[in-house]
Length: 622
Image (cartoon, rainbow, N blue to C red; front, top):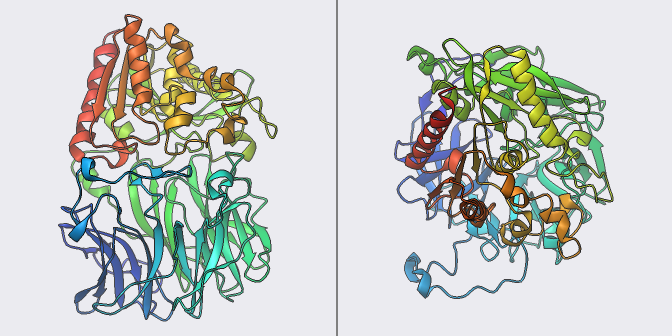
């Protein structure tokens, strides 16, 4: 973790310097209200399985103290407005795994678990139903004892302090039917734990990321209004503390206000305005709701904004684009003058490694719909063997941020093509819901493998037609998660690609609905349970078209993947082998669904090498 000094105008005022130690994963840096202390979560890189430390550093002296040790790694952290206390979120240790003195039991010595609800596990976390995340509060002093504010067997997250530092708001599902309706409410609780949490919202939607308005009379939050009718645009709302009345803000902006990853909590303004982020055509922007309710763009452009924060007239934010990793910027609210504070890509350029920029183009789908696409060109003379990438989700978006996957492919001599087909976020709600199943009572669409398939194929066609450096005869297709689904679906419906890689894929929607950590959630998009309509699941599963799959195929999957369990890969591999085909199957032990993003470095390197080698063998020669 680093600190970059700025002056009162938001301009750089010195050289960024590291704060945390090299053997410590320092994160969640939070300035004290007076700006003299920095609180952060510290996790030993050699002991990731156990608790994390909450540390405070005095900036003037460099003196640092450990305030307390949390029972598990700290996930969220916030100062009280008076600077006296901190709220944080941490998960309970696993009562089945850790026995006396915190020693992990062997599997055969671990007690059986009683399962009564859906969503008992979480990819990358394991069992979570009996070790909820809790909100803690602790005095900002050495050796303080953290106090639990959210008792009971309920997950709690997103703590936000009231302006007078007497209460904390948080998001939690604390009603009996939470695992069926997926509703999440907002609560407040006394910061001294002298009373039980009080529910603010009326159970129905899924609320998250609350923040107290400056007057303390309402909460700003993000809301999915109907979590059992996915996907929906997440909306920016104001919730009255008394009565729970909900008012939508920036409703005229038909865009999703929760980007993945890294959903940003709304930032209240003293004039009753709000700063928020929203997805827009491959970018993430900062919008501002003014005191009159009008909305304008504070930070726009072809880039991807991450975190935002405000102090007085200065808004600090992080932003990446297609040739820069995330950097720190500031913008003055009064003048709208923007300043760059860091440039992490400078080292890459100094070493002669210039990331390839994205070139935008538009494809016309089968029904005449325009689909936003991009391409990246490698060095040298074309035409180049080309990789068509399909993103996961499907309610996510490709866009203007430096993506290591694309740069690896470019560096290996492949052209890269990508798009945001229907079903992606970043566009209208109708665009995102266009691939709900035809049988849905509300907003029926084509289902997966419908107009999204048309859009992906149109992207490939348009790339060949518009870019003379794309080799139409040497194209491969690849993707992960839903992108893996689409890859498997594509090769079951066309032989135009010379090779394909289906990674952490959904290949059988019926077994996915049984085995995933989000089992029962696919009904939200399909519109019916498999108990009532098995064909709705099986007819849209790539495995149903396995006999048509003749494209050379690479299958990559993590053995600890809970989102798309390993049986999804096994079903595809076994079926193809029974048909006499020769798929290549690589299994990664100890990794979850997030292998490509946060897996062990050695596994991420090996995965990249496998991909480059596979497509090299199949696409290098005309």
